[in-house]
Length: 121
Image (cartoon, rainbow, N blue to C red):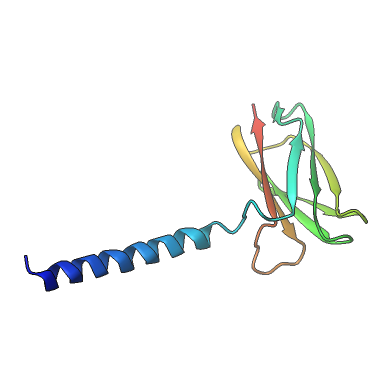
């Protein structure tokens, strides 16, 4: 194989690697550096029998939030310290590990500010 062919193959692989890395980074729209956090208490619930509370911190004070939980929605607003809390009964369409997503209310792009898991039994 000539040096020119080897260089072309190397260059093509480098470009493909850069494109793949860019695509992977673009998919990770929730970064660990984001100040917004959420968690669910209790973290494991019995579907149809338990209630749960989604809590969060690090949000912009006074921000209206839309919380996606098991195909439904909860609404909340962050307080002066940037924290929120919203509760509901466990009525998930499926059991297993589910994800809760917190969005800025009215965000047409639907970019989650935070995400947290809940185990539904």
